[in-house]
Length: 364
Image (tube, rainbow, N blue to C red; front, top):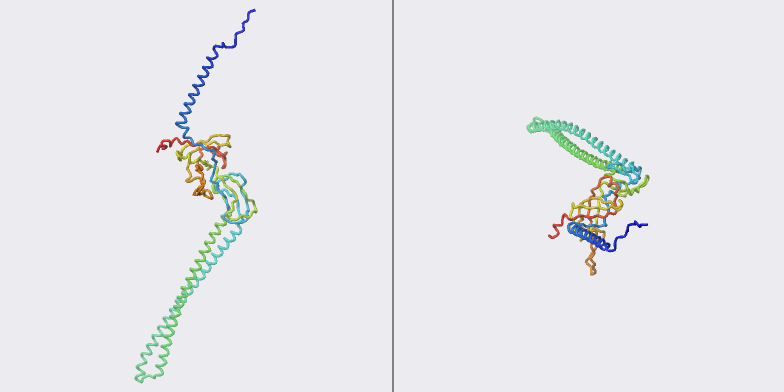
């Protein structure tokens, strides 16, 4: 019986040739990959600056009342999306409405006082006109009496008339002149009274303006009892309930504008030489399973993070250790609205800035 089984093993002499071919291929591939990596690093890779000291951020609005009082109504729930102008909560407005009504009453009182004084002035002016008419009559009588004295004086001197008659005429002329002076003084006093009344009108008008200012302030307080959302966002950190007393300025909730998210990346000072606003950024978001989104450098902070700390460091001491500082860089997110809604402030990200656009400035 003839054995027709073909041999499966290669001849021993052919194995080194195969190994050499594989080794040469691997070596060539390594050389090509190394050359490509070197070329890529030289032309682009060395200009990529990355940091994982970066977080998603937003300019959140801390909602606080302008007036104090008891919370009457809360219109929103935790994590609720709201639009600008949406009512968030209401503080009991009755105390402020009472102040508004009181100011309105004070305005009415001032207006009534002013109207009363104006009526008095009109009456006073009518009395002045009457007094002036009486003064004119008295002045005519005084002129007549004085004329009689002048006419009788030569007659008495010639003996044609008695001296007693002249004395009576002189007495009457003096009385008429005195009445004229008294009437003129009375008219002047009445005119001064008009000036005093006009000052009272000005005082009433000033009180009315003061009450109007109080009314405006009270109305502002009444409007402030209804707190509305200042912009679109999501309600967070809500710590207010119905019946709670809140003081003016107390933080009640936070409104996070999710449509205005950005990234704050803290780069080392040694990584900022070629970083410029407008450069593209690749952002890897941990919360999205390492998904990468796009962005652009918006601005670079005017100082390091430590320079804006509550207690600024002082290096003017005998002992000093140099520490690489970090500078916050604000990055604008270029993502669609659907993806943006998956992001919230505080998420950790890794930001990689492509600074190749500024490579020509390196040697300057």
